[in-house]
Image 1 (tube, rainbow, N blue to C red):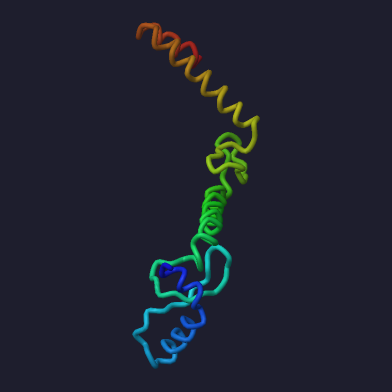
Image 2 (tube, rainbow, N blue to C red):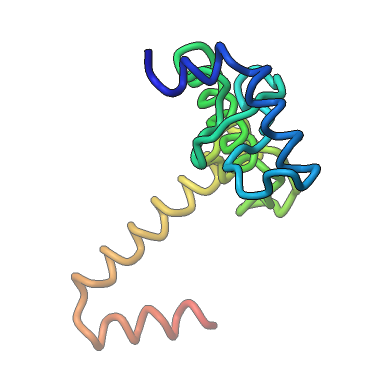
Length: 136
């Protein structure tokens, strides 16, 4: 039996030790009271890094909760890069509020790239002539 299993089976003993620590009878005891991140149950432990009452029961559940919390945090409200509307993305890497805005951004980037590639094949004097025509 490992230390974690012993703690799980002897919660009453650890609780009594914790009460002694709090009351000041034995202030140097290394017992602390924690709320399990997996099931939410209150438990007592001597292990300083422990987060779950019993890892194989609550560890995966708590880890999944933590991951979903992080993903929810990453999906906070954002501003659409095309229309400027505030939206909540469905994915953590969402940039546009709708498919229409996503298409507008793509089409604009494609046409911008085409203009750049057309002008780079021209000589400098031809590029200046085109630029003056576009200004007038």
